[in-house]
Image 1 (cartoon, rainbow, N blue to C red):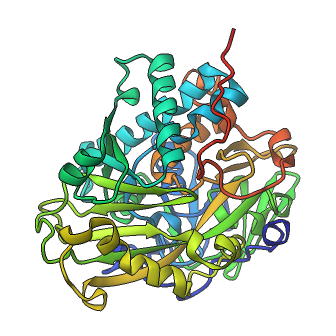
Image 2 (image 1 turned 180 degrees about the vertical axis):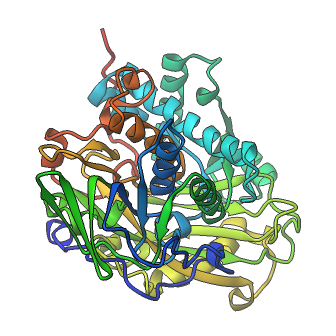
Length: 469
């Protein structure tokens, strides 16, 4: 893993695979607000995903806002936000036991509540501002195929409900036995299931909606303008691009898995991981108007995640399923440090094409995978050694900020991280600790951890919990 973490991420590659969500592309895909780049601005944000667009919108919503330039290396929302599985789901119980051990009950509970609040905030924002992104709110079901994972889930949920209280909406979970899983969730062979609140949407359409709102507030948005390097000077920073340099008082890295390209000190601190997703037409005997929940399928050393396109959406009933990391060579080792989203791993793709018929069994129907598979694509995520995002000022670098390393859970982390970073940049973060987890704040100590891979994918071997006294 050390060798994989040491691979420089480079720039986002041209001509990546086309995700389900990006077809057809938005009219903003190749947007350039001005023909030429400005020579200087107050704030440059690099990266046009959920985080970057959210930060731009938040800054420009302030009274007397500064000038903001948003740079995107490729087309609008062409990174992880436009290439994910569309799942707004926290699965907070999976990390809760470890978080209690390492940071205590109060902070562990804050992370649970934060993820729930972020999920709700994304859907509320889409609703309040009329962003047409197929936003759907309902339940999800985690389907278990491993006894240790099943046992761990019971212990974790019990602890969440003890710490947060039964009346907290972020602690509302319901277990289902094997027979229930077969009947209610159409998953023969499952040990059991766990349901709780979640949702789905097209993150691509959501981000495009946020970008349009920011453009109305004065955003200068420049696509196909990669940031080649950043250099500090006496009055701020200079961002070098193929179209010329731009000076800025402050720079924000909303670059997730690519962050080390612009700030090499993050090499091995934020590590890219290539993920794979497929879109599939439903099997012959599946509900044509879509499944009633979203899903995760949890086995001993990994999981897949699935959303069913909601009724009244453009592709109602179609299924998006991603994962499959551990079927690749060396349990997916070579996907770490890999930023090539122009290609895909054949073993993972073949596995994902057949997962739906495997998990749903006879309920899926007898259909050729070549027919039901609609499209496949890859995308680049960003992971940190401790399993938490980096949000805040880069240590020792005045006016350089970062919001990155969202662990493949950006849909329940990014949107409120954008709000938090805006408050930090504005010097209004005196009450931030009331709702924003301390573990997410950027600091010198966190960059010294050794990267070992994804966390919280296997069941903990020791379920003993250290409680606060």
